[in-house]
Length: 108
Image (cartoon, rainbow, N blue to C red):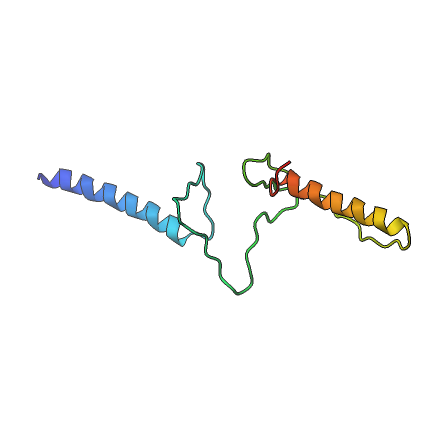
């Protein structure tokens, strides 16, 4: 192999290695394509401070093919007593079910 061809080959390899080093040493990854995991692969998390998915309240999230949505509003505590308590509890349960459906965690 001629020396100039060998130099070009080495330069190309250096560029490729530098790109890989930036990927490994970066504090974040910016994916421009879908991420596809093969069957039987898991996402392993550390047990220290925890892991967040969606760090902004206006970030959208969905599961099982549902349309991604922003964080849903809080559901108020059931605080009434007596005969209105049953109605208040049903309203809260229905609101929880609606939130689960919005994210795609249960079927509609």
